[in-house]
Image (cartoon, rainbow, N blue to C red; front, side, top):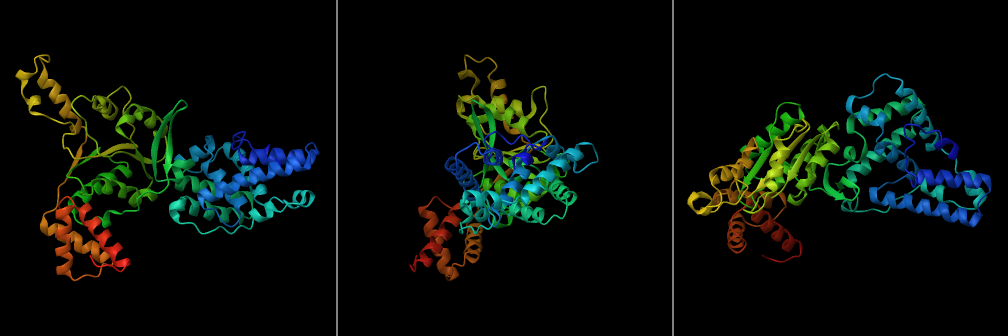
Length: 439
């Protein structure tokens, strides 16, 4: 195995502590008889445990060894995989080196672990290659990633030659991309001493736009802007503003479920992380995806100045915002920044002779969002329509008159009419009916 791994060129940067690299070193020690057998077995078992942990995290099943090698191919960001992601398979000398590496991986796919197992009296590798995973709820792992890895793994295992193997991998790069950005829908930002990075959000909300009752014109505006963005046409940053509980955040989150297969990805960022926005944009500006930077519940108090930095990132600076990035924000405030009557009384601002300019600067932030969509609370009739629709979807069996009476009592005790209140009411009814109770 060590001789195969040492031949990797484009994919040779596996990391010194990668499972494959460590296994190759242990196999070399076994062949050289330089390590006590007990120490060797203990080292092999440690790497097998790491592989099992990875399989648990990603829901691998069947041949875990081949699943792991496929995962390496799908996540290794190198010059070849990144350019293939952007432009697809093209003729060039680099293909010669890529095919050589894929030949190594194909040999590893069908590696014979029999000799080392027989010599050391172990069966861990045979078990890994014929593994039956315990059922796990999909909230415990990333089901979408797992399915992609296992599907490609099966196809690669059946490849009859290196050329077929090459085309399968490059087709995957072109369709889904490479690395964790290619595999996942949404990310959050992490900053630390080593810089800014993106962490996958594994259990994203599975809501679709059709699941949101009402607000058809608002959803259509959001669709049109997003579809223009995905098609490479001119699109605008979007601000969804209005009353709480009306579905603003759910509308934005639904977009990654609607358009993930078309290359849409989402990065969630919080106000205290605005200083990292430039670094985040630098991470993704050259990738073959379209990114929505999502800012939920955006607003600023009078003494907060982060809005200036956000304005500069959106449109200011020497470097323009890349074409593959848009900002979508939700807010309960149309103008994003809290205004007081003092803001409108120039005479009370003795220390700011250009107070009107200061006020205009604050209010201009919302103008940076070319699409502004209002989500207002539903009226009584609309609220009742939402309740009836949600009850039908969740199988709540109550006479309509009783259902609406109970809904009215519920909203009076729980914050008034809104889509969120209606969903909470239906969740309550569904739970009590499952338990055999009456509302």
